[in-house]
Image (cartoon, rainbow, N blue to C red; front, side, top):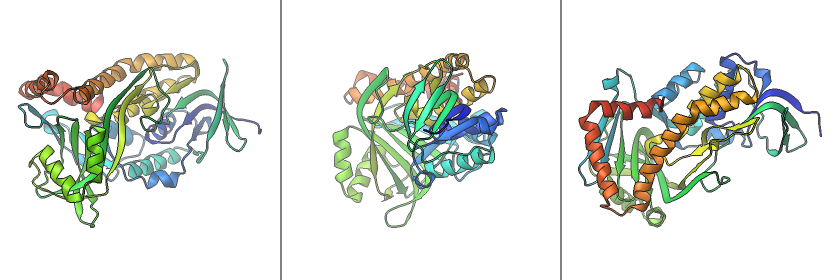
Length: 388
């Protein structure tokens, strides 16, 4: 084995959160040659990832801070939250908070491109593809042994490689919601520009995010769709024709954006909670590596970006175990409250039959939020910035 490369910080995972952390560390004053950033996937594979991803306004500010903004993205100025066929709705509008946007929608590959460029401009040289075969931690250092015989010795290792629920080691907070998300692009006859929708159905939330895309016939679509439901329902809809799928979507969502006319190829992924707020003396997890959440309210990536911001501010003071404990303490409230919010909302629909008391209370809660501006402000603040 070759002599290990010695650094202060090794970041395992060059997804959005890992890339942002590397750029934030340099922005806060750490020399780029003291940082190792590695990922098992080639950059080209990540750049071609077509998934849609929601960014909060706060995440947009983080990206701007490190030079990864502006990017090609659709702006969200309003979020309409409702429950299908029941009383209760709320509308969150950025103008009520004197902000230009509540959030943005972009593609994963576009975000990776911008963050990779920002990280490289900061002087970071990412190692990819690079597979970690073993991690040896002592009281003084952590050594990463890589495929091919190379090694990296670091004061602190940050695990930022997430993955999909069901393909990760089980953490202390783990729950299978027995739900599947169908993701696609859809076109509508009367789209409402810059308005996102979160519609609660009897089986789970249905989100429409404003984003220009392309259907199977090459026609323009206006929304990214994330539709959560029971696995058996998802299997039937994945096997359905485009026309049958759009008819089912119409029945679930209604006609607020007119008729659904176009559809891109569909894909699915399982939904669950997998979270752990712990660290060893010299390793720590952030982003999806620390907490994989249900997509309701679109909080997963944004929570991870807040992790990266806080951790960078601490590690530039000292790449030492004490900073990891300070990080866990600083992030405890935001992490636990965000996890609790998404978990409760997911469980209402994952386990309760249509018409259950818990679902009725949700409908009443939506009506109360809309009627009480302070409550609406709290909800909007959490979606944009997290719990502070």
